[in-house]
Image (cartoon, rainbow, N blue to C red; front, top):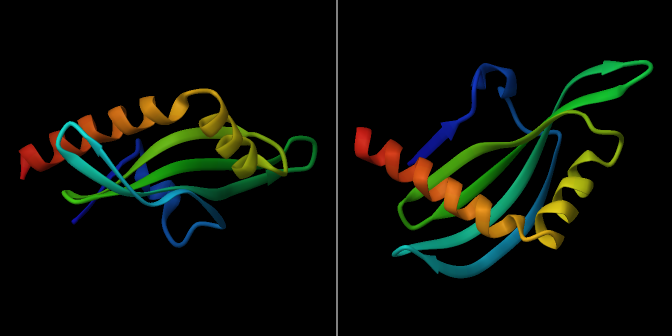
Length: 113
């Protein structure tokens, strides 16, 4: 089962323009939930001549309870927005915060069903 926890998720219909895998087959266990894969997805929403691409970057977390896609970042972030976000996530202890936030949201969605 996949849940999307993104404000105005209608802005990210269709396939992402770019994606990068952060963890694959990591089998990380957090709070009794096994995290199998974490990806960042980039959706290019619009282009402004002076500012470049406006991107929405989401995190897709696959667990043994299901998948959840949450908002990670958005805005005019330049031509390397996805790679810059992946570097920030992995180099600045952002991964643990992302995992915890994702699990809280996933458990809330499961509790509603």
